[in-house]
Image (cartoon, rainbow, N blue to C red):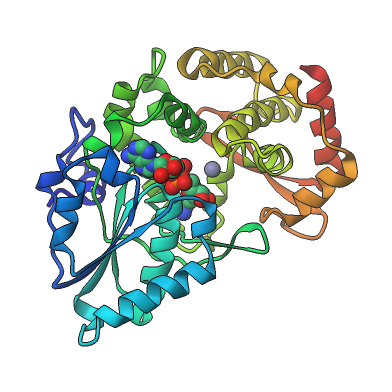
Length: 352
Ligand SMILES: NC(=O)c1ccc[n+]([C@@H]2O[C@H](COP(=O)([O-])OP(=O)(O)OC[C@H]3O[C@@H](n4cnc5c(N)ncnc54)[C@H](O)[C@@H]3O)[C@@H](O)[C@H]2O)c1
Ligand SMILES: [Zn+2]
């Protein structure tokens, strides 16, 4: 079985020229549960037949509603009815879908029979680049995202060709915020990208992006060492926009990235010249426009304050951990007060 995680970590591949086919993918453990996005049956007509190899295949609907305790209970009941003499050691949960199915299925695998092996089969760009790697799982409670969760890394990650051919342009564009973030965090990716990124280019750079994420998460698997915080580049303003305007995550992050660069220049850690270079490359490679934010009015200060305090990047009651950049591949942690962050956000908005 082709395991992208292993191949990438062992540096066996630098570029995917193409991706493996669904028929190459077979389960290895004796007792197996597949949790999959119902949409995949339409994406690849061989998918339904492929699911027959699993002892139990559970179809779910993707989206934030899936990431709930009620759905965990439902799936647990289905699984326990089929798994009466299964041993924990020889059971594996396979999860095929985008980030929502991955977060849900990963959570389930981490608690089923006190935790069983997990294989991720990411089927969206975002899941392949980001959510299938790093072991974070998450459920939503009280309308708040990812408030319950565990760390449970997939032992294998399979990336399959057919899922990436038919994704809409919108989904491709949505993942570019995270692609730009990883590129800004990793100088070798940043300098590798030279022309406007297309979906087929993205297949080729996928291993580099995945490797860059593992470089961070393997040093800080449980978010205790303070390194994983760098993956939040662009996310302070990003989460604010996502939460206040119900903007897609990718779009929110890309606007947040421009703000991180602006704030880094303002704080004197990024030179004017580098700021100009980085922002113009974001425009030419990814087609982003910082001025897109002008279409929105800054939320009221009290509202912004509320959202920021709920975000998980506070280092104390009043201090915020903000990821700035000294240059491509050189993130730096800035501690700024919430009041200053709000002042700077308003100033940035006016400067556009
Ligand atoms: N655990 C992590 O580290 C991490 C990181 C980033 C994001 N996330 C989570 O990921 C989720 C977002 O991920 P997402 O954008 O993949 O969302 P998603 O799972 O909701 O998928 C988005 C849409 O694409 C469809 N889809 C899935 N595969 C497809 C395919 N091959 N072709 C066509 N359509 C397909 C889905 O049915 C759905 O409608 C959020 O819940 C977020 O919190 C988790
Ligand atoms: Zn993100």
